[in-house]
Picture 1 (cartoon, rainbow, N blue to C red):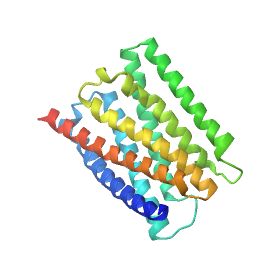
Picture 2: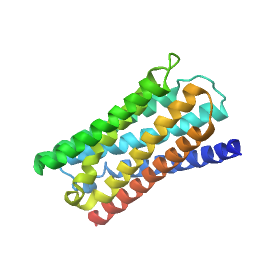
Picture 3: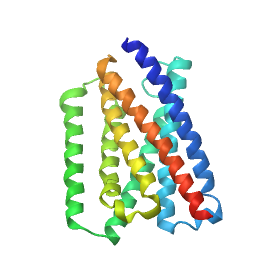
Picture 4: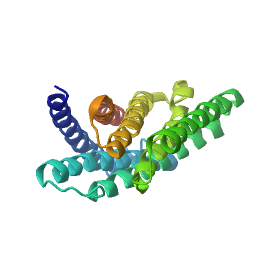
Length: 235
């Protein structure tokens, strides 16, 4: 039964990742139009540009992982998908760090800053405990550590979207969807790492796939929401 669910979820994930990638390409193309470029200040433009590039690379990485693992039957634990995923994660992290910096710079609130640091620190500490104390062993490689850690950092800085939701104006909804997508991907990374190191799919694999499904689904919704908002403001 679980094997059947795994196949169904895998197919749904790659479909949503493909849709998210296509939507990301459409939004990215629109960023090169001068009229739409005027919607953003220079800093905001680069924040959204990095964010879109990051989630686009995430989606492409998922599609390439599916092609390598299930179509080409490659057994290697590290592949081209890791280039896309790691590159995407770095772009997204930079984007949310820049966004958090700008939001705190213009609307500084000590309570919000402390809240973000406490939640982020607790989240990162929990992830590190799982990786070094429970999940991983000597057979783990760099990316087994990298993905959960950088995903927890992304969620930490993306908390600024929730804390300053009233200050985000036109693009708050799209940013909230991206934040929720990052939460799903973080949860997926944690459980996927467990399944890879233990060599068993089981309940952990099921949770990982459902989390990734939500992550890429929300990324797709975020891209569509962002594009519609950009089109509305450009009219």
